[in-house]
Amino acid sequence: MTKNINGKKVFNTAKDATNVAEYVVSRLVDLGIDHSFSVPGDFAFALDHALINNPKLNNIVNANELNASYAADGFARVNGAAILCTTYAVGELSALNGVMGSKAENLVVFHLVGSPNDAAVGKKKQVHHTLGDGVFGNFFDLSASAACVSAVITPENARREMNRVIAEAFKYRKPAYISVSLDGGNRPVTDITPDDIDCSYLKTDSHQLELAVSLVLERLSKAKKVVAIPAVKLDRFGVTKKAIKLIEKLNIPFAIMPHDKSVISEAHPNYIGFYAGLLSDTNTAEIVEDADLVINLGDALWSDFNTSGFTNNLDLDKVLNLGPLFVEDKKNYLANVYLSELLDALLEKVKSINYRPKYSRISIQDTPITQENLTLKVLYSQILKFLKNTDNLVVETGSSSLNMPKLPLPEGVKYHNQTLWGSIGWATPATLGVALASPNSRTILITGEGSHQLTLNELGVMGRYKINPIILCINNDGFMVERALELDPDPSYDDLAQLNYKDLPKAFGCNDWLTIKVKTNQELAQALKEAREHTSGVYIEIITGKYDYGNALDFFNSHLKEMYS
Image (cartoon, rainbow, N blue to C red; front, top):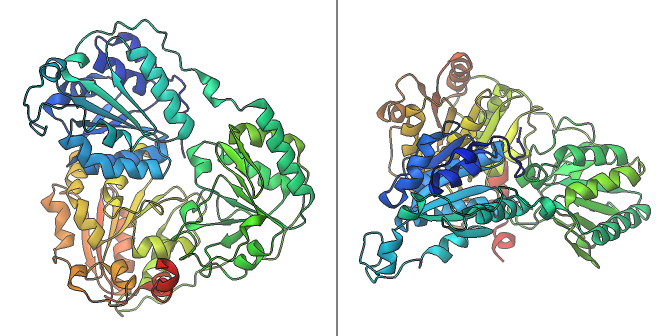
């Protein structure tokens, strides 16, 4: 469950900081962030020392900066915010893809970057990690572009700037970029500004709020068939419980899109299924698209993978978008309306619409346990039976992220995926972050071997820090999703080096893990039974057919024109 960190002080370790680097780290730890993800570098030594010396912080040293950024992304999904620390240029630029993904997915990641000494900058010295031209700060704008707020922290501005950075990051739920020089980081803070975050940034413009409430009530009064589509941003902005209350008070149905899976439990009585264009559940698309009013609750995306290749047939004029910071319909755009306050106001004023169309819930039939070779259909059926209601399920971009959303999850399972950014390789390090943020839950990773190859060295970090996920690595002899998304399924660039996947955990120091390779239904059933009883990490290599795309990928393969036109 997301802790919903909101810039509110949990601890007060900043008062003990002896220098700028310690102060910066302590301000973030005081928000309730108890893990950081980093790759050390000499320009970042002041920050690195501050990370390891803070008594309330556990610093994780990752295999590389990109992995560290993915791990911070995973941690932020559960904890509400994360710390990432890299060095100037070579480190921060290596992490840039992952941080940009966190921006796309509305995750608060504080990216701390150690920069060269102020003296070297002033004298325009030729130093390492530069282009040798005496120019510094030329990478600042690149890293800042992956954030919603950025700052160069000095002894003279540390308190004032950290107040601003924290406030902006939580306002927009996006990353923040914080640069601290090596010598500046070791100097004491001289800024005397109070350590108080201006919470007025969370306040709605009262006139705009009044207009927004009137607009919503007016649209509701003219509609009989109202459907909600809750977005994952409800979790990101900490308003999921209020959104559920609104759905229940209105007594209207809600459908879930792929990006937003598990934001509200599919076991909820008002749930009417999976909505994603022509891949929607039986009669779900009909209910949604026949509605008089569709409340986009939290700004769900009408993107390619969220709509099954733009195959939805919803008249967007019917949509009322209640975004995290705005309200919008075809005629109106109201800015500075914070969803939390809007929901509070609506819960006081709305009346039940009592629209409950008939919907037949999807159930996954048990598949026979045989010695036949595995298919994706059987695989996903067995995985669903394996899940428990406290699990975190991390699903890599690819065949699984396109096939899994349609399958009904048990109540309480939290689903994590990068539907929008879609950077392959994200899921393995993200699993580390999710597991660290939820130590009392199982963390299960489903990944294809192609994506896994990009970041599998993070297994060594899991072994070092005794993180014990359950990893299901689907080996389908290449980049399956790439094969499915083009007319020719056999270009050589979709072939991969063939690794002995089940031997990887031992090679990376995960010596007490259970490792199994399975090819048949029966072997998978036995492996999952052993996994259920094993007390440390589990790694199962699962062999499936090279062209066994599954229902969703088969669909995308037959709708390439819609996807790319």
